[in-house]
Length: 100
Image 1 (tube, rainbow, N blue to C red):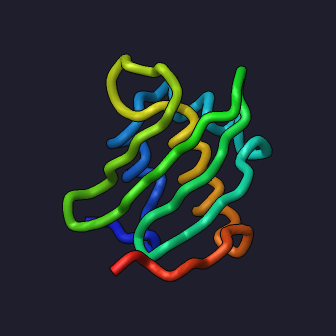
Image 2: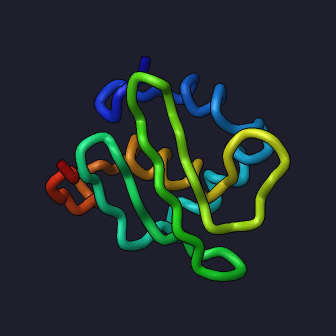
């Protein structure tokens, strides 16, 4: 199972459709207010509106929620953008204490 330290593009391909992953690449510069708390990432992603994405990477794999209306299988491009941003630039995420 992946962790935030070991997550790979193959893990993303398993969690997102090919279309969502391709579109996520175009949203990398739209990821804002990125935070890591334990194995959870949260961020705001600017789309047609500002969407809130929350992603946990743990023993169950990748689980995520986004405030966008996407409902077509796998996770949306906003979730993909946050994960790609983490993989490419983890230092851009603010570190917070994980909830107890």
